[in-house]
Image (cartoon, rainbow, N blue to C red):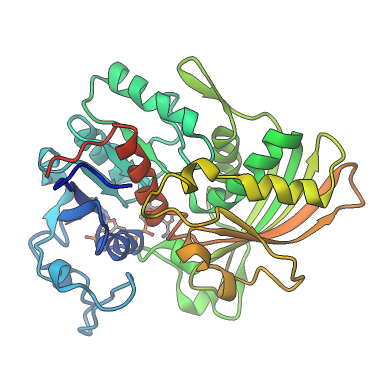
Length: 368
Ligand SMILES: NC(=O)c1ccc[n+]([C@@H]2O[C@H](COP(=O)([O-])OP(=O)(O)OC[C@H]3O[C@@H](n4cnc5c(N)ncnc54)[C@H](OP(=O)(O)O)[C@@H]3O)[C@@H](O)[C@H]2O)c1
């Protein structure tokens, strides 16, 4: 699949100096459709070259996007996000905290589509939580958002990084068999906390931190919204209970989640495997540049998934599942372990895949 001959989608990355922002740059440096024309961050970084904006006091360049920092980005001057002229790009990718996102995303969306990693708008009725291959019918809400808010653009956030792997694996099971309850314990990577304030190495190395503020509430609300049904002008969330315990562990990238669930009827492991194998076919078959071959990979090795070995499956876009087995303590109970890449599918590359889909749906237009 390609965009109309000679056209590229001009992109701004806001929060470009942070962990998720740098992951955007790593994924966009050779993207066939998208060209990064603006980088923005806080007033602290504005006016500096990008290389200087991510240089620490010791002189080290804190580049997180893999390989060498591309020269094309290193010499770009970082803009103040508040001053960014969104009309000069076709889409804005935002990777800032919810506080600044609330103000900045509305400002940009007046003229331009915004794809966001932040939670600022996730819980509003006219804002879908899109996961490519999972809930494409929710895209219709974006058109409603444009109409009701009087914007030319819209805000389309991806779900929280812990929600992403969980929702991807639960969606086909809920559709095929019905889910009655979910218990989940996460073991989340330190990169998920970003650089500011981030997690201090002295606190997390040789340790597990048993609480991530607001994370469990986000996982419950967002998973139910992703799996919900579009009715009229909003999504009616799925109605089963989700009980989560979210912890931070000394892993750099990749969230591991131990999931226990009660299905609405008796099924076999083969039926679950078949539901997972078919998931995402509409996205994967459409030729989007960032789509993996498989949205879900089920391993039969009882020692997988392991975060270090499996987080980069499908270049970080495939959720790897293993240890699928019945839970004999619960009627129609099953349990499994998943690994999902928090900065790739869970943030930057997941947003880029969403933008690719919205280009093909005519909601983002190539202007360059
Ligand atoms: N890290 C992940 O795995 C992950 C996954 C999913 C979603 N997210 C979400 O992505 C967003 C960014 O997270 P992160 O981990 O990348 O955080 P981070 O490493 O701390 O980066 C924060 C970025 O926001 C910028 N910023 C801070 N205050 C700003 C302001 N007032 N105006 C404009 N820009 C401002 C910073 O710029 P300066 O350098 O100039 O301060 C920096 O570029 C958050 O909403 C987070 O929840 C992160």
